[in-house]
Length: 217
Length: 254
Image (cartoon, rainbow over all chains, first blue to last red; front, side):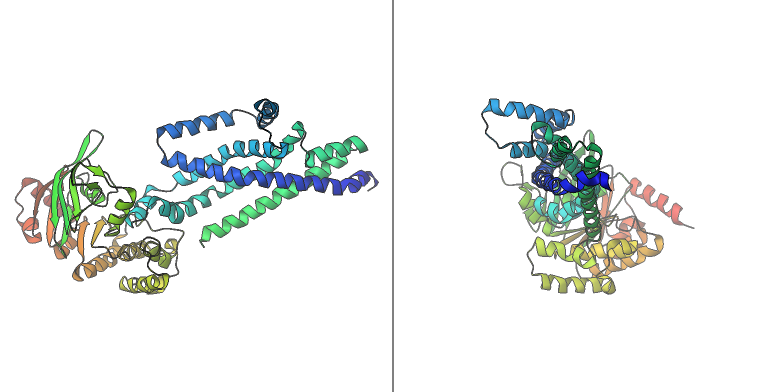
């Protein structure tokens, strides 16, 4: 047990880092989800022009590693004169990045509903908004739930990249502790355990949510 | 009640409806028969504007569906079309119930959210309708737990909950096991005898005879012949109807 002394000593410090990780992830998941949903709806309902614009965005984002994008924006920011606190800058980049993937998941969910469901809702006099709200989205979201939760888990882990541009969170905290204690294995086992715990909780919650949506309200 | 005049509809290069005109009076049951691909289903879907059409007019109670007819032809707004559809009930071949709602929720969703009927009132009406189609004990069941015949009767109740002026039936028994067809037809018969105006696309010839006030025979996107059931079924005027009925009789004479 003696070997784990450094981890036990610095565990509180790591937990504070984890708190930052969770804060960053949540701050990004919310806008990424909203933007993702918006992009999915625009893709399904708007004309060719909007569709190709969004498609271009998706291909661009999917073709660039998040780490490259983060670093690029980190260097770009001062040149543009936009004075955004680093935390929010990073949250913005992660949101925009994950919105692209989330929109694809939602779009697939919406398109996988049979045309017949739309016909039935329309024939009952539902306008597009209502039809989306009570017929299409409840079913589409259920279909999209499992891959959506996977993306959220992936987003949590992606926040570990921001230490590269100097933001402090769990990974950065771990590296600091390692520099002080020279105990990389113990510390990173601790960090990995904390990441695992966060992601596992998220996945469990996703499962729970999924079960609830399956049955209806 | 329903007036279709000069309806033209094409899918790409294929003309599926060519100058179709049809008038249905209040309380009348018009049955549309004809070979597959004749445009029957498309005609029904146009009446509800589930399909766009290129030329012609469709009015229910004098009010146009889909396109304004005064002055230049212009598509109505989404909202206007939705309002027009409230007056037209439709039942589909594949039921198309909402799988995430139970039977009662399926029925009350549209009255409550579209017509803004008070929920308690809508639920009371829904229970009446469930009783009418013989599903009183199924209010809390989800569609997946119901048989095909029960699902289709629920779909009829759902359409009726909007108090439509006219009901459209699109081959509503085609997806059912033979022993379940009867219960759906019984519900439709009941509805017809209550004076509902109906346009029915079907292949159930025995049913056609005792429910139809008038039969319309379609082929190749045009109305070939129409008339009273006994006249059209027993003394058809055109060769095409004779051939269709002969094929039908040969197949079902066991």
